[in-house]
Length: 150
Image (cartoon, rainbow, N blue to C red; front, side, top):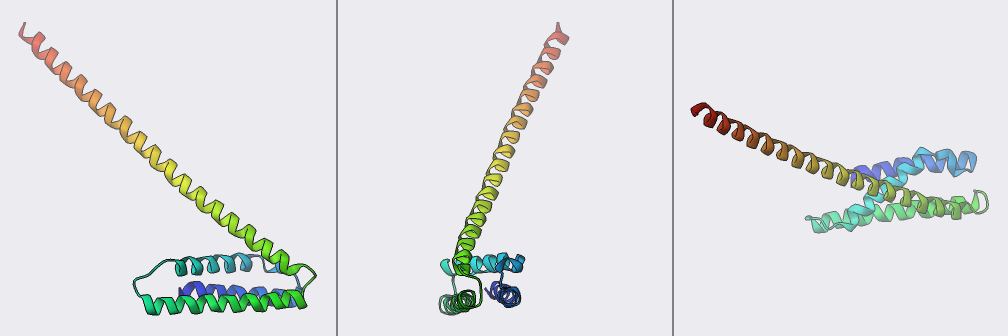
């Protein structure tokens, strides 16, 4: 939880500086995605139930609260110091980034499934080849034994 919060804080600082200097969110580029990734990781951990209930739940709550406060400050800066419609663009950008992360996650899962299917198919064909080779060897051995006695 702590590394994700540190990453979110660092990315937030970069975003805030970029907004103050240029008034454009896109100048923060990489930091915006790092912030989203850290925020998503914190939210994902907060949604999971952990073994250390009291301490970890408090940590998760405090991390989420800090993110909420950061976003509130960011909203105020975008509304009052940024260009018109910047907050709405930010929300749309967050939604788009979340969809892209989800699509990437699904693509990774699909790739794993396809790799497992390939390995299973390869193992089946290898096993069939071994069985056929063994049967052929047994038939050859039997025929040599039978022909050798005649």
